Length: 372
Image (tube, rainbow, N blue to C red):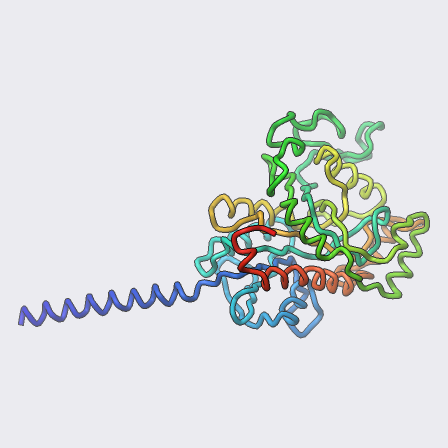
């Protein structure tokens, strides 16, 4: 009887070991290692079949039919049949994208170490620089929230606006950063993604930005009659009268949906100031600082590679009023998910982004270990 008990115990231990090995093997087989992660920030309703947000065109047009729940994420991940492409909406705001992205990057369900990232969404654009419907590959991400601010009604009369850096006493105080320090973008090496000590300035990988822009710069983008009518109101802004285009420029991230000529002037000044003149303001949105700080952290943890990340923003609305309008009239004439160029901007985000996604997926053996 004791021998039988020992044999039974041995069999039980063996079966448990085999079950554990099978479980681990199955888990290993289920790990998804996408070639491309498409990251957006909002969806209006469902992922498919209703009014589209930033995610829906990717899910429907790229057949991302698999639904994957990731603990800690506020929305399920979508994937295609072989897992080579996944997409997820991680917003709104700047804090939630960072939290969602960390949950995704640390999930054992995914291996993202060699994945490329296409972060994309709609944005406000300045009529002094471009027209709605345009698409911009982001070269710098500037956090416009981590600042000192004095209400303009109480600020010194010679200030251009009430914003100034945390460690400064006035809007244009120099030097902005100690020359040669990590906070001095002019001292950064020419290659690779970079970030300053507070995460207020992020430079995207210049080589990858150039590659994506070269591939897409001549693409024709949608322009509707409603867009042309709105463009025509911006008399004295010749670039607002042009057809939508693909360009390169900086994204200013703020969680406040600001609007108006004075804020547009601040945006241009702040981007120029924070990058020591290296970048020019192109788009305004609320999410990208949080996402890029999180992606930087995941890179340091060995869970991702932010040198493989691209950021694409497309203009759904102007960020300031046209001549003859007040800022309030202009802001309230455009509503979220119903902007004049809302659908064209979503289409541009997909069509321009998809050209790059397709190139990466088709040439993955080449791109897997070496950046383009």
